[in-house]
Length: 497
Image (cartoon, rainbow, N blue to C red; front, side, top):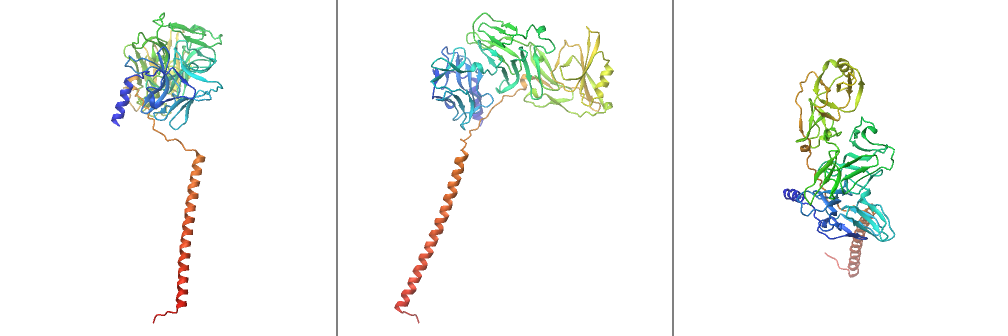
């Protein structure tokens, strides 16, 4: 077992290099997971590869990645067919059927992914120079292409439309679907959405701003956005940007990362990827990054750091997105509660009450009268000349910022003294996810299984009948022999005296 783990991590240190010269997959042909190093489709410019990509112990995705034989970093995957259901490392295969359909079969011959295409004329599966995996027929008609089904990455020239969206990975080591989405909303505006296990919210553009205040417009219903090879991005809602290195053609990719931030990565002359643009400088403004009952603190040098509120502990030590849980029980008796003042702490959204021009004591009493109130935000608005009160039923999207002039008051029981905070660097709190994929034997057809049992029962019955007949014949033969012996004695007339 130790040797298996060591071998697995050794494989991850080196990228999947395209050693095959397979330019296309012909109709009636297959790619085998057991030959994943050789059964690879390569683009004509040798930049992209498509094949089976190992993500865990005996677990594989069918994916597209950048071909970089000179790099010792992990392979850069740009598309996955079966990100929710990895296949087994034995007997799994991708086949282009004679019907024109692409199917990905697991070891149990279960279809885990399919292109759902049909063609009456011959087709081939190509990997183009732009990284687009395309199923075409002899008339050059495109029946299916990976650009229409992105996962978390857009390549230059690949459009984001009303029918597509980017969905982040669960973490840096778990490529299944995460909680963040980049899409065109119903108002034709490009947005970033946090779609968590319990709640969902928009965090980009800033949700408290109107569309025109963000420089967008929503009257163009074409819903089309694209990054070109020069590093320029344009969207139908009037949102544009250029990367720091724009103007030069080089390998690029726009990725919605697992932390909910959109970044453009560039690479020069087969060197390491670097971030040439990102949409959100302060990652603590991204919703859900530290989970419930916690705060986020961002430092440009050390990165993002998550902390549980005083009196709370981490719920899941392998994933900060689950947030923190209380170590106490609050009662409805207001005399048993107190409030801990936290300077520069803000929790956005999920207010149970909003009271403009409120005093501090009015806000305290408003929270104590509600058994479900767990704290309140109190801040002074200099433009309006008064303070406002926001009582909270949930503590989500918490962050610490020196620019925030307000205060947050956390409700705690008087009988306990909570002052310390449990905190850790958020990125250090993600454990590598290994996806074991045990070999499953081919499932037997129920009808065949029924007939097998029936045949066995009939055979057993026949054996019982044969044994009974054989026994009857033996007994009959013995009785016949005895009768014949008695008849012989009577005829001869011998007696024993």
